Length: 195
Image 1 (spheres, rainbow, N blue to C red):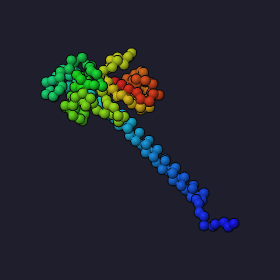
Image 2: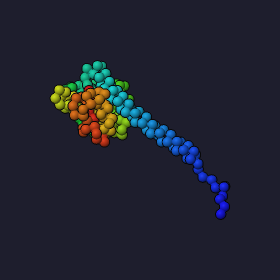
Image 3: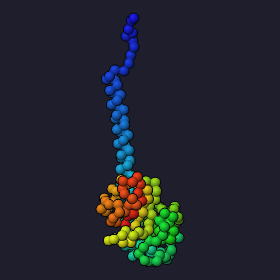
């Protein structure tokens, strides 16, 4: 029997080089995903800050809260009615009507937020980076805080909701001015951010 010297295979060195290249590619993909997740998280936090800034700027300009403004109808903004001036944005934030919808419209008519100021219903709600929308309404935050106007953001990943709570409040899902609908170990959480 003769051994064929022409038979070729991969040497250990070649296999090691291929494994290193595959490892580098996997590492790059994972790092890229982490960068995307970080960018979404930063955008979400910046959106909350932007909505809050627009809300308080509106109050500074008009001495009333957007949507709750008793002079809303007299400003000439299509679809914006006079609010009841009780310092609360009332209405269902998920299918906005009344003050909760008019708040978004007023903020857009003034140029404080971008978007179509004539949009109504769900179309009036700005989207957040996790595939759902922001809403404006009021919420009873309980002892020490009481009923406050707030930004709602549904279906936020639990870890992002926790980071938001730590950044803006106490990091505990059921206390303070940032509240989660469930413990932050949940896959998704509905978040309430007091204004």
